[in-house]
Amino acid sequence: MLDALQPWLPLLDDEPRADPPARKARRRPVAMPQVTAPAPQHRAARQAFLGVAAAWGLTAAEALRLLGEPVSHEAERLERLDGILGAHRSLRLISPEPALYGARLRQPEPAFDGASLLEVMLRDGLPGIAQVRTHLVARITR
Image (cartoon, rainbow, N blue to C red; front, side, top):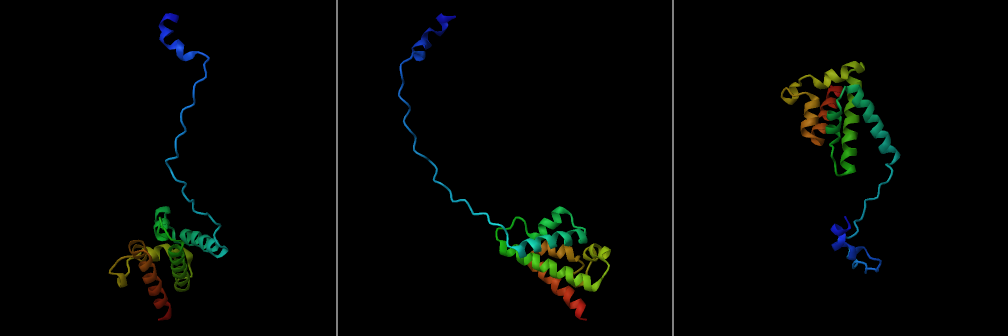
């Protein structure tokens, strides 16, 4: 057995070996974005959105699409939240029965060529949310 290891025995001696040369770092340090806690009004808007999503009967995928996920800018997300919360306030004035909100959002709307309010918001993003909000406000003021 030792005869088979004979070629390797010089490598196992007690002579100190030189350490390999140190490698230069190939990567530059990357600046990590600072994660800050959202402002209290932002947290409140997000919490309110969760209530709206539940009242509207949204799926998780629909809720994320309404928020524009993935969104690169917090400002755009806040604009979306503002529009969605405004649309919800208008729905509450049009129909005080919360059970009807989801059905109202999903029924075809002649003003949008037969597309539902939810379809318009999901399809068009922020402009669609603004259109739906304006449409609902106009229904209140008639």
